[in-house]
Length: 331
Image (cartoon, rainbow, N blue to C red; front, side):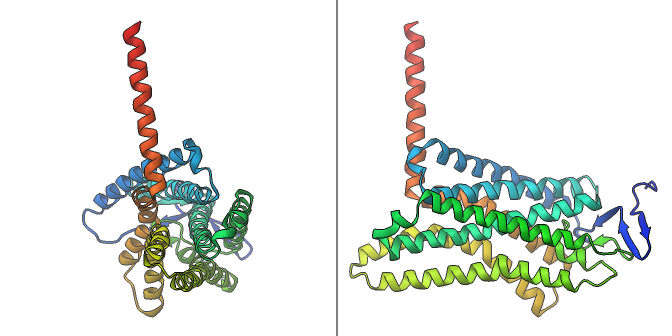
């Protein structure tokens, strides 16, 4: 390796800034490249699934509602989040380009976590939508309007940008005079700031704050909304009506379970016991990639409105094809 590619260090008084970091990834796993090929397959399916869902919502005017504005935002976030993470992971480990420039590392961390943040709070927004729809059905269209949903989503994006920009900015004040090996598959915030030589107490506080804002507060809010929904459903006399209302929540509950269970499980295990770096990396990759893959599939298969819209688009396409063939025959 040439001297330029090495993690050369710029020295300024007692401040050390590396030119690059080294991403370790998995250690001592045979045939690990097959796993990255599997991630490539996940990425392709994620792009196709979310692009299809976005296209359906865009083309079908009956889906231009506040509820599907939230679904559109989730699909867009899944699309961008996977694109921010997986191609770089494949480039790093499939082609053995494990050195990453300092500035690129901070950008990498910022974009991966901002989309995870927005995804988490989009699920909260969905739970709020279901809460109003079931607990206040007569006021639903007055409360859940396009402008209200747009305002909520705008606040989510602005707050996530601000918090993650602060986290990345605080990394920039650190001095790295020791190891430059990040024991992760991307420039993760925790493994990155722990490499610093100077005081990292503020970074630790930010790390805890990000964890609370991305995982704990959303879970609490979602749990509270569903407790309220359960109380409201218990007051409905008809079992058929109760089941019908509950079915509108199933897709969202599945999405919540897929996103939060791996995240919570990994963090609880990390706090209570030792996790082998390979196991942590595997859990992290699945947490960041599988929800984005499954979200459009679940919404396409579990939501009647989406299924009807897909059938409608399919019929329209067949009708246009038949009309085109008839015109060609006449000519």
